[in-house]
Amino acid sequence: MRNSFKILFYTKRKAKLKNGQMPIMCKISVNGKSCTFSTSLSVEEKMWDRRRKRLTGRSEAARSTNALLDRIYYAVYDAYMRLLRMPEEVTPQAVRMLYSGVQQPSAGIVEFFKRHNEEFARMVGLNRSISTLYKYKYVCKHLQNYIFDRYGMDDMPVTRIDRNFVVEFHRWLADCAKCSVNTIWIYMIAFKHVVMQAVAGGLISHNPFAGYKLHCRQPDKSFLMSDELQRFIEFKPATQSQCLVVDAFIFSCFTGLSYSDVRRLTMADIVMRNKRYYVTTRRAKTGTVIDVPLLQLPYSLINRRSMNSDAPLFDLPSNNWCNAVLRDAAAKMGITKHVSFHTARHTFATTVTLANGIPIEVVSRMLGHLSIKTTQIYAKVLQTSVAAEMSRASKSIESHYHIPDRLLPRTARPIRGERARTCQSAGI
Image (cartoon, rainbow, N blue to C red):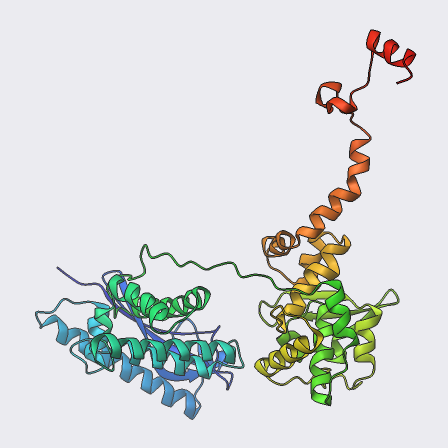
């Protein structure tokens, strides 16, 4: 049987490196199946000929890079021809392994995970965040500890990752690592992402996560009531740094901005329209537009700060340090509920907006939610608003309807007929 075999070079336009160049990838196709690998070469977008799959021009950089691509092409083709003379099945993964000098796919899952993290680290600051990188590193460390505890090895061959491995790792995170339900959910999503890259690369022939369901527990949306928010407003921090954190927290309570959005906020994000100031920016998490009117209180918090349009209005320390300051302040105020910087965003959604009759569609827009279903969670939490709205509308509703006599309590039923005349004569 004749095999169909192709070698194709292409660039990853949406994953540019820090120097602005595009990484060059090699795609191997055999009988409709394919796998890809990095050539470790890169090119400026304007120098890449998408038709010829080579660099354009006669510069030294173009000639040397094209020569290296030709060498890779012939080396991959040579690996394919050698594989045809072997008893092994001819697959794209087998060609790539033979080209790399590896007869057997002996890569370990921890090693593969670390290589993923190294590639991810190079993209931090472009289209990846440092916090996500830390998450992947935590998961990789947990994975290495699990393999050592369970199998007594430092690493596990990628080929041995199956559904049972996934389930046991999940159980180990709960029983041994003592991770919460939602932390396990986050970690397993990250692990699944890395495993699926191994599947896409042909290192794993099947999907270990097929039919595996990831679940999370809806967390309590802790928020401040009106009197608790007033206590924060009147609180007097002991130091200038604590004052900065509390001011930023109060500002977030009246704008709904998250910690990362408040931290990078500048005067350039404060604009005036129709004689009112607005916070106009994009969410760091989703990129959605935020456009929130500024009330007098939050505006007074930034009015006394730097007018430099490039300087951050709230040059905050780490999120953990801010949370420690807020917990300490809450304890001094007699607030026993869990308070973090994100509590401010919940407070804006509930106490400041929904509880004051602002439509949920408007609140969703100001919060920058991609779906109104996310905002509806706050409406479910705010049970007091349900009672308040029904109390407000009850008189209007009841004025249109009357209760029939048969449903009235016996003492409240009107007296009619002979009994009424008897009661009237008796002075009842």
